[in-house]
Amino acid sequence: MPVSKKRKKDDGYQAPPTMGEHKIARLGSSRWLAPAMVACFVFGLLYIVVFYIAGQQVPIMKDLANIANVGIGFGFIIIGFFLSTKWQ
Image 1 (spheres, rainbow, N blue to C red):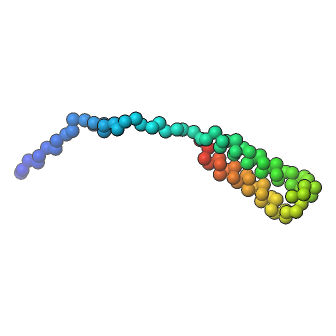
Image 2 (image 1 turned 180 degrees about the vertical axis):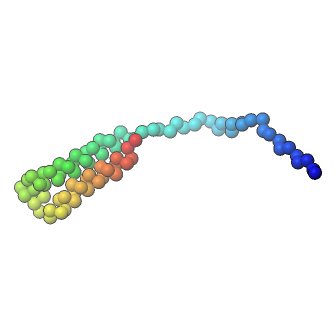
Image 3 (image 1 turned 90 degrees about the vertical axis):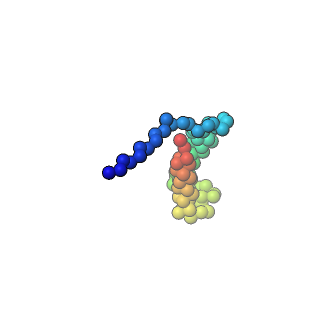
C-alpha cells in the first residue's frame, strides 16, 4: 500500500504587517442623546397630563381632537423610546 505524503506544517501564526496607525473606535453615545431622550419622555408625559387636567383651557389643546392630543403625547414618548435604542 502506498504511503501518503505528510503535510507541511506552518511555523506559527504570523500577524499581518501594520499599515500605520489604527483609529481607536469611540465607545458610547453622543452627549446630546441622553438629555434628548429624557426630554422626549418627560415632555410627552407632561403633555398628556396637562391635556387631561386642563385641556379645555389651553388654546392649542382645545382646538385639537382628543385623540390628536393623546397622539401627540404618545408620539413624543415613542420618539424617546427610539432614542433609547441608540443609547449605550
